[in-house]
Length: 383
Image (cartoon, rainbow, N blue to C red; front, side, top):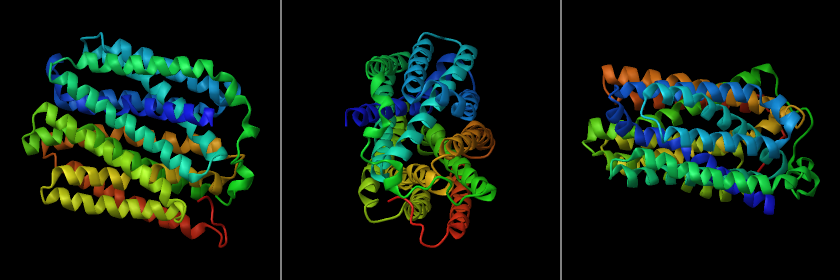
């Protein structure tokens, strides 16, 4: 339970920096005197670092172990955020985006694989709920400092929180070694050694991760800019609207944790995709705040449910490699698509962002149903 508590805290800390750039970028680009679309390039570099660390995570975690990997990656993230808070150059931000991505990718793979193997689906949903809490708090912290025109202090505050977690992780290093003490061992969760998945299953699963992170990161990056450009919000109000997206994710993951007692993970994925489509319709009707919260609620169960399905699909022996490849695919989407959406939106309309999200939603639904058709009858997977 002590280790699980620390993992919960790590997920909060993991979410804090993820939503900062989108909420702070309107102020950052103004203070640095660069076009608004350039924010996508910083996001692209950060995600490129995450792709690199995700692909190499199997070797890194196998050599260092989960505890050391999470500790060192969190420390790297904290130091990078602190460096961001002291710079006044766009190019320095680009340079420091790479180590920020490297740290985030290793944490993501290490924690998600560990939880998928050793805990039940409810813990995965609640842990990602705590990520949503962190991602909600991040823009709120930034919104407070944006009122004073000091986006640097927002980054500095988050960095100090990350450094505090780094100390906790260092002191708890020994807890990660005793995996057998976990009450929810892989054998008790319906996971076989090999699973049923083949190369086609991995390709479809990786496509689903690519599409989901494309949609989520595009919404995260451009919701504030959309609110300012299309709805006439000021910078502080736009940051709060972005926070509502992550509030919806956090609340939805809290709820989906309870739903896993009765509903399978793959069913939750389909329900989430349907809710995203409904929320996009609400946005067209002009209901900004409930629509953005609805988008967060729809996104909520998808990512943790796909993670929990991975050991079922590919077995406990191959899960870490499969999760690494899937997350690399996810961050390829996060790397290129928000930038592309930003460039196209600036030349056309910010409404294009939500057309792109709808397309991702429909394609994700098709790939999810295709994987479900491959699953042998009688294999229920995790609850």
